[in-house]
Picture 1 (cartoon, protein in one colour):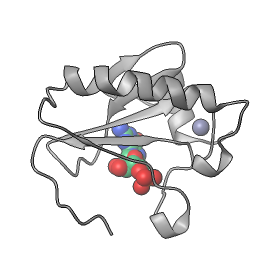
Picture 2 (cartoon, rainbow, N blue to C red):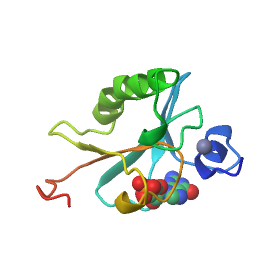
Picture 3 (cartoon, rainbow, N blue to C red):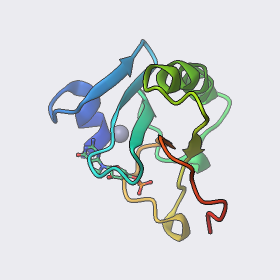
Length: 112
Ligand code: 5GP
Ligand code: ZN
């Protein structure tokens, strides 16, 4: 399968890893939109939120268990935002489920 984030998980494409466990891989976004901009992804290929089901939702749970650790390690003591774009209207560009962890400054209230 020709998936950029699967290649990042396998190490075929290099990344700046910040966290890894059996289920989750997390790395710095290559084009940060905020002072801290990290991505957290499942180690299984899931295209997007639309494809989450009872067979793979444990990956999502593991990601959300990891996010507070990733945020603390990144120094996000004053809060952060987690975003997952799903599909074209949300401008999802990489079709492997990912959660943006963003912070390091006060973020705008308006997201749309
Ligand atoms: P999306 O727009 O699909 O929600 O987010 C995809 C994110 O992946 C973007 O923020 C983009 O900067 C990031 N990205 C795309 N290609 C690479 C890459 O090769 N390495 C890293 N670290 N991030 C990438
Ligand atoms: Zn993938």
